[in-house]
Length: 170
Image (cartoon, rainbow, N blue to C red; front, side, top):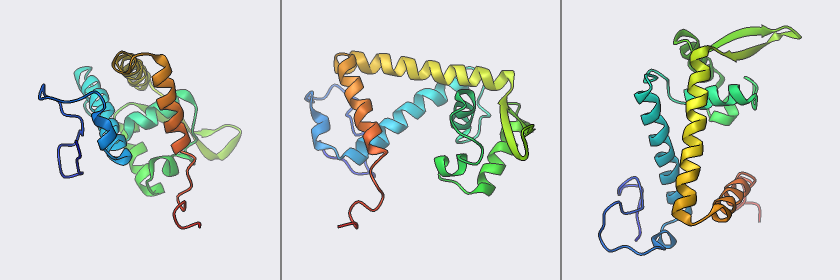
């Protein structure tokens, strides 16, 4: 099955019409990544809405999760999200106003700001983490074991190291 970005957002046929187990071989990697990202996002957005967190702005779950893990500084967030500093500032303003995070000066360097999660933010971070665990468990069932999921994660990790100028750097 081939698909384009103008077809159904998920390249996998979601009906019982005759499909084969390796349908994904005929779909581009970029289309699979996009559809997988959308599917995962759908799981997270649905869980958040059902739990009463339907006011979380776009990219809010990512910022809350990164804050919970301590994996990124505020200075690293614009690059990680692919947004401007101004857009990040607006996102953080919304997260503060809606009660997900608090901003405070870093006591070691007053020029820097620190983000901390409120109780509401902690609840979101835990829910998003649970969505990830449930999604991983479902994937293990679908692909037939943890080894296949580990391989997929290794491939996705490797994709993050591909230089943007790969095709032009010949």
